[in-house]
Length: 127
Ligand SMILES: [Ca+2]
View 1 (cartoon, rainbow, N blue to C red):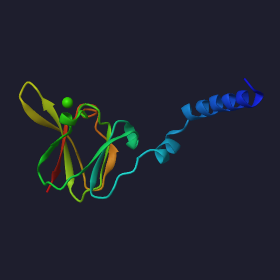
View 2 (view 1 turned 135 degrees about the horizontal axis):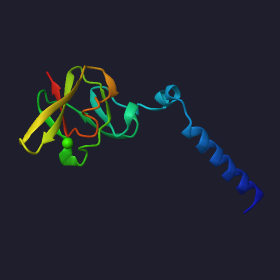
View 3 (view 1 turned 180 degrees about the vertical axis):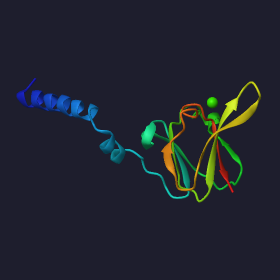
């Protein structure tokens, strides 16, 4: 390994350690991956980290079942850039119904409630 290569590897390790100790405030500025206007954006991580999928929801009061697309039980945060409130649902296999587990105002972005984290399967725009 050349001297230059060793320097680069060492620098990379130092940066990785700095990244692990990042403060919550600076983490927030790095999160909330891009979300287009009029879309509902869903994220695997908290504070908008790790974008999963976005829906251009043109359908009022119709359930978008993202569990069918393989995104169920993964969403931890969301950004609602529609002009309407949205509701999140969890599929209840026992009752064979969708249970309402969280809701979000128009324009809001936040982590899902503790009881809704990593369990939702569908979203609906209320209008
Ligand atoms: Ca679920």
